Image (cartoon, rainbow, N blue to C red; front, side, top):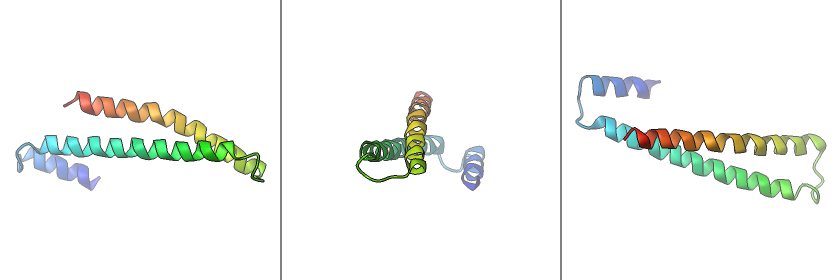
Length: 90
């Protein structure tokens, strides 16, 4: 919230030339970082999912792992869409 207020003040009063571009690049970098982190988490969860039969996981843990994988697969298109929208606005 404070970052958004700072951005509005800097761009509104034009304190730093080209600040909007810098801010956009920071947003794009954050989206890329989140997308990479999401892919790593999804890969780890899929690896654990494949090993679930040999490890003596309880049913609730298996269900929780399955839900994490399903949610991760839903988040990837959202993150890619966010990245495309940010790049397209440049």
